[in-house]
Image (tube, rainbow, N blue to C red; front, side):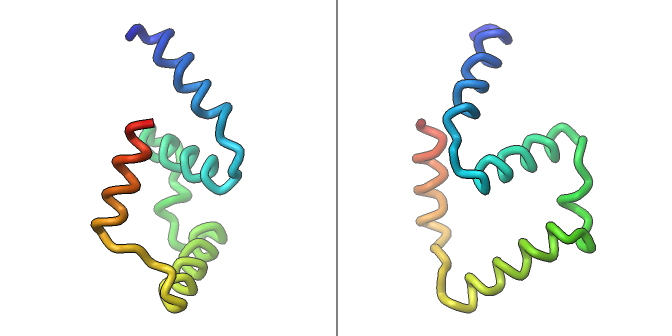
Length: 80
């Protein structure tokens, strides 16, 4: 697949994401990968503090998944 084709397909995938949280996660991941965002590493940022508090509340209420389930979900996501 050429660079242009890859970019076109990537844009199509992004255009189909309606969930703001998933889109933000993707953006943060790509920005981090490209080295353009230090927010993810700044433990004092309001976004990081909010995300950590949310994660702690989810864990405390039992809203977790096993590593095996996570791997299954990742494989499903990658196969789309």
